[in-house]
Length: 292
Image (cartoon, rainbow, N blue to C red; front, side, top):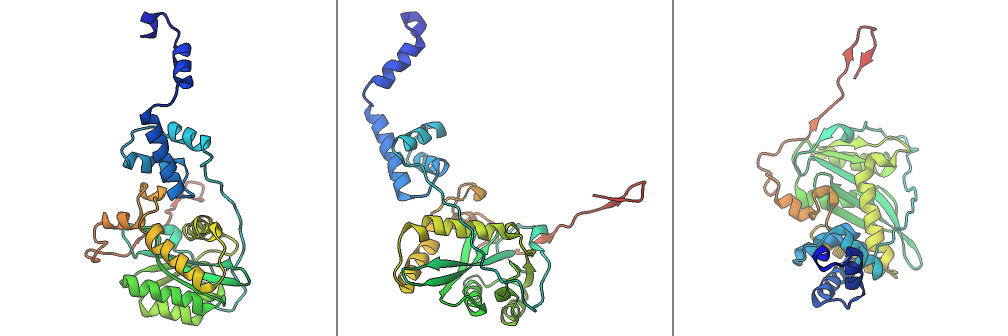
C-alpha cells in the first residue's frame, strides 16, 4: 500500500505512532494494567498469558513495552539467609531426590524452613511442597526454630494428602529434619528420608524457589505487626493465590491445582506408584576406566 501511494513505510509508521491511540489500544493497555496490578510480581510473560485469557492476541514485545511505559515491570530483590544447623549428631541420609523420575503427586515432598521479620520480633515458617506439582501441602508458623515447627508442617501435609508408602521426603540436613521425632514421623507413614549435601542449597532448589516467591510476592509486600496477622496473610496466599491462581512456568504456566487436576490418579491415588530411581550407568572401557 505504501508503494502504491508513493509513501515511505517509515513515514507511515511514524504517522501511526504520533496519532492518538485508538479505543482498541486503550482497552489493551487497560487489560495489561489490570493483570499487572492484580499480580504485583508477575513478569511480562505471565501478564501476557493473563492478557490472552482476556481475549487479546498480542505478542510479548507489546506487553513488555506497555508495562515498561507504565512502570509496571516487576523489581526483584535477592537475599539469602542461612537457617540450617547441620552440626548435630543425628543420622544424615543420602540425596535420593536428585535421581528420581517424577510421574505423579505424593512421590516426592520437599521441605524447608525460613525466617520472617515482624515489627518487633523474628518468627519462623516451615513449609512442605509436592515437588511434582509445586503445590504447598503443609506449613506452620512459630517463634522457635525447632523440630516441633517442622513436624507441625509435616503433620498438616500428611493430614491433607494421606500419602501411600514409598513417598520420598527431601530436605536439608538441619537438625530439625534429622531429629528422632521428625524421622520417626516419616517412618510411621513408610516414607523415605532424603537430604541435600552440606552447603548445597540448590539441591533443594524447588523449595528454595518457593520461599523466594513467598517473600517477594507476599511477605516483603507489607509490614506485619503480629504473628496472628502474618498467619492470616500466609494462609490466604498459599491456599488461594499460590496453589490456585499463580501461574508456574515449570508447569506450563498453570497453577498447581490446575496441574494436579490434569494428572491421572491425582484425585484418588488410583494407579499410584513410587517414583522411579534413575542412577547413572557405567561401562568399562578398554583402558580399564569406568565411563558413564
